[in-house]
Image: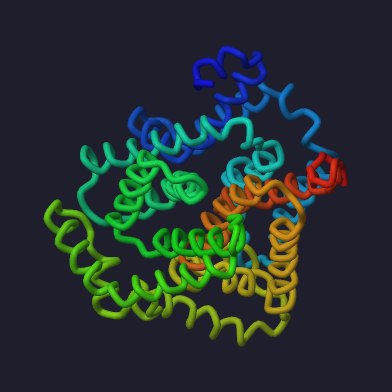
Length: 401
């Protein structure tokens, strides 16, 4: 059935929900449009996302529970109470209050209500569109490595991973072409984080999520292929440097490979120095509860820790920070371990890589919408995780928790 036929069969709620999903998927790219017409991107995107969510409430009204609303309200309370517990970061907490509480954290609810299975074909179309949009932006507006390029790389990442997941599940030449184009764009933007996220996703998906008839044999073959690629990495890097350099794009990632510095943390634009400074301050944390949200910016001259573990420790101390991180990791482990639809786990893996793995290299969890999205999506997945045996086959049915 074609997408046009599927659209005609949708009810009003279904069509509005499709618009909602489309807006979410292209959320990051719309920022450039709003800026060019003189509107604050975060405010415009949030208002439109909220209006669309309300318009299609019939599609998700049974998904949001009182416990979800309670979680959000508790977070809001903690956010403001933290200014009393951690007065040193009060100014930054209040300055960023609107963006955190009304732009970033509400992505938790987007994850709670997100239904990807029945819209998988549409998400594939949107992912291809996102890759094409990025190509057009690169040609028309951007020509060098900058913070905007890094932002666009991470915005593009979920679309590239979605195409890769479809390609790994069922080979199609068109998917291969779009993935190659998307991956080329990621590497040409000159930041290593998305490159590592793609590798993480591919390895995790092939080894733990994809169903194989002969798992051990396939895994051995994959390991051999991986070793071969590592052995040929120098030649691959030299080839890519020539290609990217000839069109004026960044060759930083492949230069790092040639210099054996891809995984060298000292080659990280000062991130190692930032974190050394934060650890020095942590050693003087006599209260043992950290320094509060955004406090890392006060020590580093406005920069975040660029590592979610360090940021949690610096914000909440070693003990509480480790407990909070452990709670999130337990949630994600349960999500990937429980008997949930494979397509749901794969979609969750896309945003786990795009948020948690990304935050190991760049950004800040308190300003990362995808981080709160994957928390909501994992909870959403666990609510549909009970197995029921029917005719000696396992099928998944919804079960409230």
